Image (cartoon, rainbow, N blue to C red; front, side, top):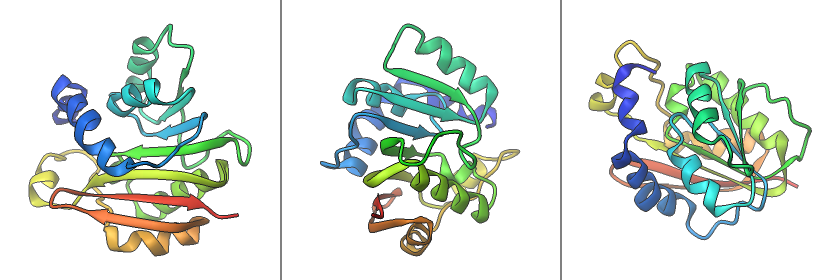
Amino acid sequence: MNEAHEHCGSDEWREMIRDVILPWALGDTDLGDDVIEVGPGYGATTDVLSVAVPRVTAVEIDEKLAALLVDRFAGVPTVEIVNADATSLAYPDERFTGAACFTMLHHVPTVALQDRLFGEIARVLRPGAALVASDSLASDELEAHHVGDTYNPVDPTSLPDRLTAAGFERVDVRTNPFGWAVIAHRGW
């Protein structure tokens, strides 16, 4: 991520995730007691999940961000930070009770890798478990914010077909003027 993303580590952004984005996306969805978070970045969603669910495994591909999170969550036994590529997870099938993926999919460089990531999340979720994801809608302003960085926004109208192909069912996509959210359940 470029330097413009340092805002994602701010108290203001943490409040936005905690008070607006996560409640809107999650609704009353139960993620269970062993949640995988993909792409925590600076950890705003991890902060909320760490007090909302009994166990969080946050998988971050960026080595520097993962190290920052390891330091931040040191001493929090219910949070494990893993520096890894979520398109190839080192977890057994059906390990997790829920998954969260917030404001990071636009950093995955290709549609094929995004779809591979969806497939890996489905593989490690238990049957019926929920994936809750959210990201911004494509815009010129957001693209300008990503100069020198990966910017591959997800078209929310593509999500039902893409998530179904990855092994999800009951795909519910919602949008607002700023972004989209999806809740999908791993198929049985």
